[in-house]
Length: 331
Image (cartoon, rainbow, N blue to C red; front, side):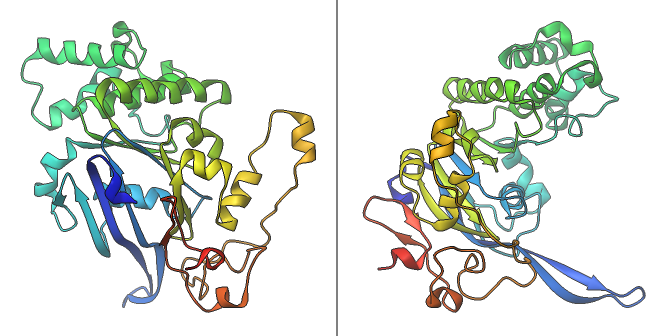
């Protein structure tokens, strides 16, 4: 499926990010491991948006941070524009970071309250030594603010003088300062009012078309990723369980977990909402320290079979190009 992409910007293969759990005061010893990301593979084509969805705690944000090499990788490979950056140190990552940026979830916590907007948006230019000419620096900051729908004279204000939606626009402008190729958007609208979410999603789509950007759009709300994603990868407990185009996923989800997530999305029409059957996922998400044997979803799956309890289903690519890890759709 990934080989048919026009040009692969990012390829992730069998990515694992495990966090050791230690105990003791004087002598520290490892007593366990949190398998936050445990064998994730996907690829993103140039100009494409890959939606990465799943419940909180499934490893979406950790995957994004690992791709940016902001977290250490336990094993696996991250390849950006054909170059394996999995083992790059900070010095070797520095020029790569100009091409890979992140838009954070919290528009309140991600902006320094003591810095003016001009300094926040222009900080990447300073860090990368691109702010020697003050006139060009100020012109670039003004251009970035206009690009995200803000007035250039807002540059002298502080973050507390802006609404949540405006603050997120400032964060987007900062991410665009170095003209990146790839943006990882970590739940960028989840902290915003519903009335503002659509405006920010539309802004992302306009910027993508204008600047030829590639997105990984992380979210737990499937109604949000539906409008912006070309393909969607569904994560559960550190693993990807289904990858499909937007239309494939919403018209005919194959994995029981994907079906349950879509069933939880509310429908605006009260009659349709009342008529459709509810599919409630029972139980709690298992611990990432001790994931269940076999299929990780089998403890909550309404369609569980005996084989699911012992055999981990491999990711299979089907005839229509989608991929799913489920024994219901075996070879």
